[in-house]
Image (cartoon, rainbow, N blue to C red; front, side, top):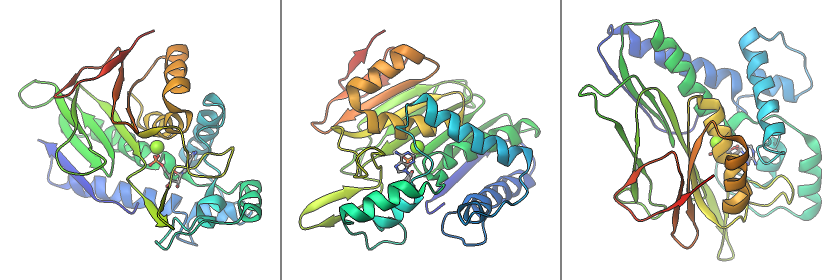
Amino acid sequence: MDTVMDLTVWGGEPETLGELEELLTDLEKTWSVTDRDSLLSRLNRGETPALTDEQRALLEQAQALSDWTGGAFDPRLHALSLAWGFYGGGGHVPTQAEIDRALSERQWDMGGMLKGYAGAACARLLEKTSVRRAMLVLGGNVQTYGSKPDGAAWQIGIQDPAGGDPIALLEVTGTRAVVTSGDYQRYFEENGVRYHHILDPVTGYPSDSGLRSVTVVCADGATADALSTALFVMGLEKGSQFWRDSGDFEAVFLTADGRLFATSGLTLTGCDYEVISR
Ligand code: AMP
Ligand code: MG
């Protein structure tokens, strides 16, 4: 999935880490957009491969998340990401005609939710083992499982887009997905302008919603991941209203001018922030 993954489990059997690795490798093989033999590539070529119940459910969940977010999360922007050159480096600004064509192609890309889904799938696997606690870091996605050995809350850092120490710590307890989408995670520069990888499905351009990052905390990993992408596209105002209307998750917004906002169900430490209330 083109990122570094760091899996820590407490207790359990020695083979559990191997099983997690196998699960992640299988998901990568199935849903990769760059591997021409993946299930996703076959779907994108218009083939009709047999799907397992789980695979069908993931595609349906992706569509449902897109509908729920009014299309801000759009799992069918593969041709657009390709037009921007976001795979394999060497990005470039496409022409308007290229953007229009790419937007009409509707090719699957699960990159906006796959790592969160993978974290949740790992947590489900752990339920069948004797592992009682785990911290799974899949790129910008964190999946906690169970409680910390000392019973204290998990502390998750919110990354500073400029690098270095986290700008805030987020406390969560139990099994949770904590997923961040940020404009600093993948980008290129052309003529002094930065272009990042979270695309606005309306304009076809990198989302220009005034945010640097959005972190979502939710019981379900795939939902957390899709929402982090969607709320980034919506921006602070629309994203806050979306949270008020729907609940079931919490979010932290980091604005371009460096302000932090957190929905009222969260506690941040080590920073100043404003609370978003219902
Ligand atoms: P994330 O890091 O979870 O925000 O996902 C970003 C990745 O999802 C990008 O690298 C693209 O593969 C894909 N993507 C970009 N824009 C969107 C969007 N608006 N909705 C869904 N997926 C997107
Ligand atoms: Mg996401």
